[in-house]
Length: 303
Image (cartoon, rainbow, N blue to C red; front, side, top):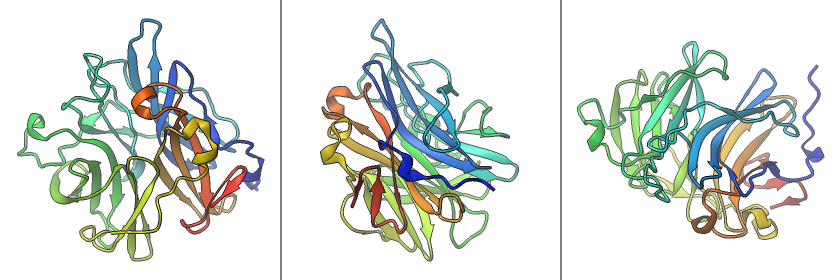
């Protein structure tokens, strides 16, 4: 029998620690056959000062020890594949959604060519070349789709085989598809970035990132959204490494996993300066957990 994962053994909420030359951002996690597959944006500053972003992955069986980063995408400033949103199982494949974040001239943030994509895998390790998601419909040219980042895929809670793609554009935009290829634009709602959506009973629970912290909204129909509770900042006030910004919360429902039995929240923190100062360096991926999505715990703390 698999030994229960002891979250109390964690001495720090930091799972992956950034440095002067490295940032770990935008976590997305799959727990499969007792292994955590952690996907994230890896930002590297080279000796020349050039900055590149990659989608990378590490694995762990206990949340204490993670494998070294494996790059899943190519080195290319004009693309900078990054911000993996989540991984779903579709037919006999794993599907990972992600974005491009083009900064070909050394821009601080992505230009208007940022789009969203998917990759496929048989084993969560080896991934196909990215394919663009035509979430505005096949009749809208790629050049006219507009800047979009931070995708997230979710099957409809009421209609089997209907999938939603959430992405950052005009708040959170939403499109739906029955085959992950042909998409229909649905609309948009006010929201921050890095959306993560769960279904809980008869509601959608949406986590998003405002200017700082992690906000929560709920909806029964994906049209009318209501704010739920206070913005989550966990132990930020006591964490120099996250005092600039705490963001990009990804919530994984592991309540049915006997060795875990909780919701796990993965996020990234930047500090002590704000991301406007140290966007490409020092960012760390952290962890918190909850039984009910309301009270959150982390090594050495609780709210």
